[in-house]
Image 1 (cartoon, rainbow, N blue to C red):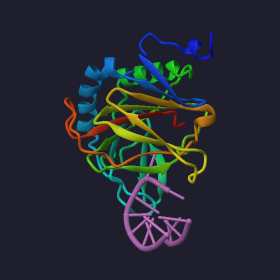
Image 2 (cartoon, rainbow, N blue to C red):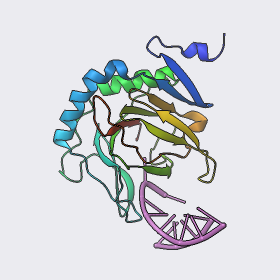
Image 3 (cartoon, chains in turn blue, green, brown):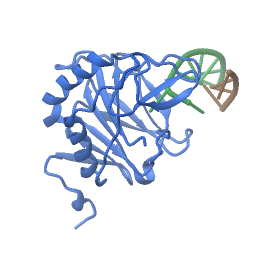
Image 4 (spheres, helix red, strand yellow):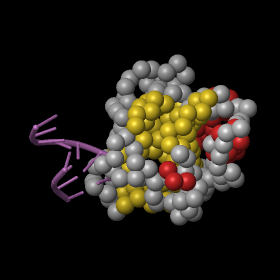
Length: 216
DNA sequence: TAGTCACA
DNA sequence: GCCA
């Protein structure tokens, strides 16, 4: 029996290793999609997608919103997690149970037990949207993994090293795929190539990504 | 450097 | 790779 056998999950059709502690779970989110979409509509109704500005003064091509106790935001002064939506002044919408369940199950399938996310960043990519290489390093607890769910149009995920200059692997991500990384891979640089327009049957010309984190 | 640009 |  190999180490991976210990992590087998009945709902995980296919697991790809992209690092010592990093995996792509192909199609893992598919059974959840019918519940995720209406929940997303509720979130968007409370806290609409918006294009935020980075500390460098540039507007992100990716539009975002959040759900859960904490939400990731950026402005001219830096990145941070906030309890309130800066646009509405109200708390971010609650994290739907189905979101938390998916994140927890995916983490477990990748070998990370008891993942309890308090933040879900929701990113919307339109054709041309991209995310340049960056690290997720604004979370208090770096022991918890990152769980990233892909819906809609496919994208090329870039998975680099611990330095920005390290070469990045290109990983295709499709509707329903879930990427999970943590442990020694927790601080690896990653990003998304400019999105190509290839309309998805369910979501049209967009890609939705949920990124679950333990921020505090 | 959660972005953009110039240049090889 | 530079810049800021």
